[in-house]
Every structure is written in structure tokens, then in C-alpha cells.
Image (cartoon, rainbow, N blue to C red; front, side, top):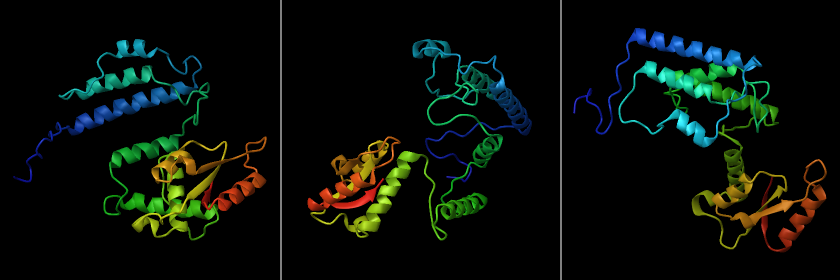
Amino acid sequence: MSAAAPLPGRQTPMPVLANEVDTILHKAATMAAEWLNGHGDRKHKVVEWRSPAELAAELGDLAPRAGGRPLEELLGECRRILARSVRTGHPGFANQLYGGWDLAGLLGEWMTALLDTSMYTYEVAPVLTLIEAEVVKTLARKAGFPDGEGAFAPGGSLANLMAALVARDEKWPQARRKGMPVGVRPVLFVSREAHYSVARAAAVLGFGTDAVRMVDVDARGCMRPRALDRALQIARARGERPFLVV
């Protein structure tokens, strides 16, 4: 097989001309600017709402296609997507965990897409790996760990799983290679207001959701220290091994 031959089962991407790159990116950037500028215009709704059935009928066939499509046609599809999507940067948007937008953050997102790299080695992401290391050091120092290490997670659920894993390995260093010692019953303690992902982490690590003990909270939603003390005493009296408090 020659070096230029495509891999079996893999389609060769359609060639893109330099002037086509300039044209498409310019139109896409203009479209993006119009969308973002519209967030502050009160005449725009947060979303032009449709029911799932209505929206599906309006958008038509959404199934992946075997063949390619002209880039100009894809720009039209982008416009249709924007027209029926939620304006999360709109002043009237107040949903769930986020809102608003930041131009510097948007440029960062575009840069990561433009570079189209991965963070697993310095070889393929020399600048980004150095930036990541400095950000981790800065956050660790702010958290009180001047010589700390860290890793980024895509969200709170995975972060909780990583935290539970670190706590397990700290308590039982041999667990990573040999598994948990026979007869040990690990338990972890969480606020009654804690996210469900803590129980899921216990399930993923093989401890089971029964290993999660709920601790009462006060009127502000803070864990009650005395309630935690009692829960720890009860667990130890049962022969259980506490290893994590969330």
C-alpha cells in the first residue's frame, strides 16, 4: 500500500481550496458575530420554542448521510440550527448551571478546534501542555497545595469519581494492583444535599451504593459536624472502614 492510499474503510476527505477556506470561514465568523450580538437585543427571544414533534417536522431528516454536502449548504444548516437553539447568552436566560458568554472564552474554544490536537503528549500539543501545567499549579496553590498536582475533568460527576479514587488509593495503596483487601467494608459519608454522582462513584469503584452514608445538614445546607461524628462512630463500631467525607 502506498503512503498516499486511504486506509481501508476510510473515506478520503474532499479537497478544500484556499479561497474556499477564506470564504467559508469569513461567512461563518460573520454568522457567529450576528448571533452573539443578538443576545443583548431584547427583541430576540431566549428561544423560538417548538415541541419535539414540531421541531423534528420542521428540521426534516436528521439522520447521518452517506455522502458529503457542499460547504455552502452546511452554512445554511448552521443558520437553521441557530434559529431554533437557545440563546444561553441572552439576559433572560436563567437555566441550570450556566449563562452568559465571554469573548476570550470563545476565542479559546475556537483555538482548540483550530489546532485539532490532543493533550496526551507534549509532542502533539507543545504549547497547550505547558499552559495546562501552569494552570494546574496556579489552582493548586490557591487551594493550599504549593507543590500540588492535578488533572482537569469534563464535569463534576467525573471529578467526584476521581476524588473517590484518590481517597481509596490513599487509604489502601495496594488496591490499584491487587484489589481491595478481603473482608474490608469501606464506607464514605456525604451531605444529604450532595450530588447523586457520589453514589454512582461508589458503584463504579465496586463499593456499592450501600457504602454511601447520608449525613444531616443544617438550615443552610451545610453538613452538621456532630452528625458526621456520630455517623463515623457508628460505622467504626460496625467494623466498617471510613475513607472519604464529601
